[in-house]
Image (cartoon, rainbow over all chains, first blue to last red; front, side):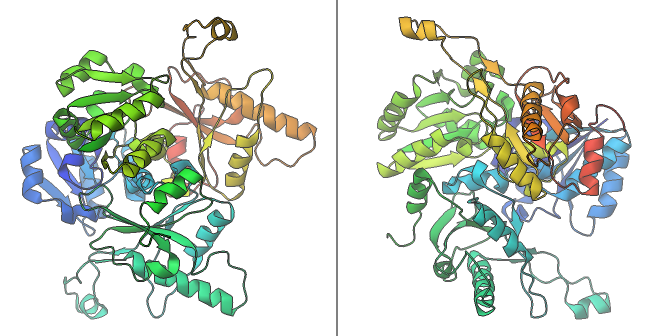
Length: 277
Length: 277
């Protein structure tokens, strides 16, 4: 039968497409992939079950590996739906699932949807002028990598915008709990625009101290986006230094470093300026 | 009132989101933007009117400029929907409409959807490893620009994939008809993967003749995509030279030049290989 990978879009149940809803309803089992999709906090289980007319099975981080095998086994004889926040190909996990299905001769059907990768254009920057996308990592005391910043710089030098996806820590365990084998998890943590901006600023300062050339500095314009596609979506345009102080509210956040901007892009960004300049 | 920009996704009426459908239905007028959206040939007018419960007003290339003013005038006192194939921010035209609405104090609401900009990942290449997107132009005898190729090269050199959007000629007039003032248009033309590959090959040859360094050549792997998200979607992975001979069928096509590929990307591309290597 068929393995249907269905994009849920930006995170509200109404963001599913008609094709996605109809397809999921017609399947004998519906899984909700929660490993990469952290937006699940915006999705109400009862609402989901009601919309699809059957119980949606949540598959979290621990389940994800064994889930793949189970889903594929089932898809041999039944139509199975896997719901994914955003677009099904937004995360490596799903490409892997598709590949394994194909290798086993199982037909795969994909229902596309919006993801932050294209919805980010709502800030006014043209999508085709974005360079490589960057994943920012939350620093710890002992681990403060700068490699993502080099990618941002590389885009910036070429005049390209950079979408920076911010870090998410879900189902993290303390070392103590991990050693004791306690299945007790820390509350999820979502990196904010101001936290990311602080890390960027820190990197700039370090490079200045080392007298390294760095085109990005505290006065570089940046754009913060929060809860894109939601009713309370918030966009703020300001300098990197200013962004360290901006409260963008609840997650998810992402940060954009504009490259060379065209007049219309500039005008759009101005409509989101935190201080009219 | 509110100007609603509603993404239709990849081109079939069922690709609209539930939010998009409900929003459009609640508006007093619904426009279908046909300037940038060439996928309209996949959308049946009767089907659209039925789905929305009212007549959808088509706005084509000629109408688009005056439409903006009219739509904005109407949106002052009514809820107006503008339907756009793909995501509303896929084209500059819509960003312009949003900007003008904001400047007039009209509230803008956006319903996001999939577009080729994120759906392209269905070929197995990871979205975050794509560099700048490139628009290929159909060459004429007198006009054969190569600037898009330099952008592809620049991505390629950095190991990034390039999505090449192929040219579309809609509502083009012959010089004769234009001079006579005849509103007679040529049939729409859509650049194919093989046509684009031929142009690429030509550029490579020219650069070789001029002894210019060019990392891309006839043996460079490329990926052709046709009708992404449609039932008869087709993906083909082969060399640039081979692509000049591949018939990808009906439009729309796009061409991807992969940069550095990871093993899983490579495996996925292999599933689309026209000749098993």
